[in-house]
Every structure is written in structure tokens, then in C-alpha cells.
Image: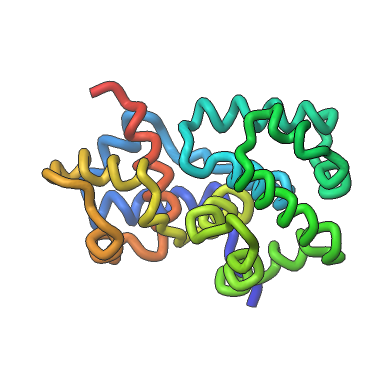
Length: 208
């Protein structure tokens, strides 16, 4: 069976479920509107973007990604990335670890024919098994790919700081919740935790 990808009608179903099991989602959805998640079909581009976004602010990630994409004439392909020198990548603001990770991703896509289609049609476990062995690719990076590129409906990034902060605010917790607490809390939200994460990220930008 092919994996499920989020579409508009499924998002509406997800939001109704979330509000039913956790009424706190109601004001969030009213504040900034329905989820508008639109998957990025270019998995290589999306994975590079996720690597760049590791452990830095959203604004910094956008700036570095824009410089990096400009460095390959706005056509991000494995071949063009592999043709860049270390100095060129560093000039975009990429650390040594991220340069190595991006080169590893480029090498995998360059050497594996049809990888974009393979991952698109694979289940979440296969995607994780394929990408996690790469240098610099951890669970969070794969989860960002599953959400923002593959549009998988039930991804719950318990290690994401934005999600942790948003849950802390929404549930008026005294301390940041850990992975175990987040997993337990979100159990009733299944199988719609991707949409929950999206709304929680947006809640951080809603005026208090």
C-alpha cells in the first residue's frame, strides 16, 4: 500500500479531530487559519534545506539557503552541489559539519537512480532507514523531510525546540516537555500529529 500524503480534505479532517480531542487547538486554528502545508516535491532540495536549518533560527536558515541556492544558479542538483568547492560552500555560511552532510546527501542522490521517486513511494520506516546512516542526518532532519516534502500525516517531531516551546505555552507547563511526555500527550492526536505540529509551530508567531 502506498504511503498517505496530506491533501486539503485530509487536513480539514485532521483539524476537526484535533479540536475534538484537544479543544486548545480551536483558538490556534482560528488565530491563523487552516493548515496550508504544501509538500515540496524535490526531495533533494528539501533535504538540503533541512540540513541547513539544523540548530539555527528560521531567519538564519532562510538566509543561508538563499545564498547556497544562488551559488548553484538557483538550480539545486546533486551534480551542481558536488561541483562546489569547500570554500564556496563555506562562503554561504555553512559549517564544516553541514558541508559534509550536504555532500553526503548529494552523493547519495547522484549515485542512486530514481531515489526521489523511491522515497516518495516508500513508507516512513524505509525513508528513515535510507537517510539516517548518512553523516549529519538525524531523526529531526528526516522528520522535516517527511513533513515538508513527503507530507506524511502522522509525524511528531518530539526533538523540535519550536514544538516543545509551543506545547509548553499551550498547556501552561512550568518546564519544557521531554520526548516521553510529548509522545504521551500527543497519543490522542494520532493519526494527525503532522497537522498538530504545524499549528503548534504557527502558534509561536500568534500575538499573545
